[in-house]
Picture 1: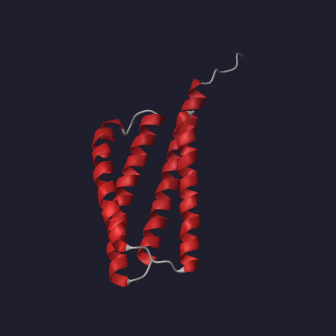
Picture 2: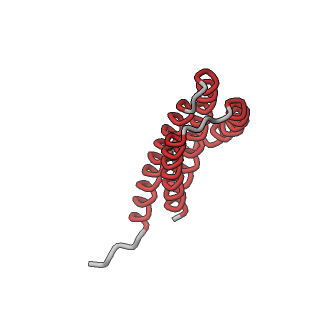
Picture 3: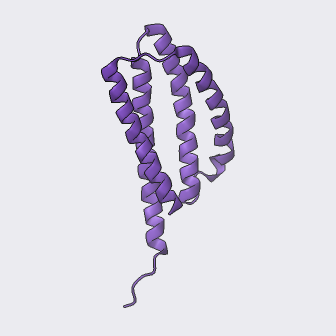
Length: 132
């Protein structure tokens, strides 16, 4: 059930990011590239360390797999934020950030689907079967 909650929270996060992307696209906001870069680099260092620790458990049960998927998505997202920061700096627009945010939302929604499917499958295997 913990993995179901984790998958649901990942899905809600993905939907929230989609909404944020649309809102920023409509408003034409431009983030601060230096802040993006500094925070993106710090987050990458932490998430890369966690990724290394969790890599051996990537094929485990739904709970371990969900932790690994989230960490993997965070590392990819951190790298993408660094690229977006460079893109925002180079173009002076928020579009590179919005594109990266859309990719991150897609990763979150994909991860949520994977975790939920595995967790529900494991729950079905554990539930008692009716006597015949």
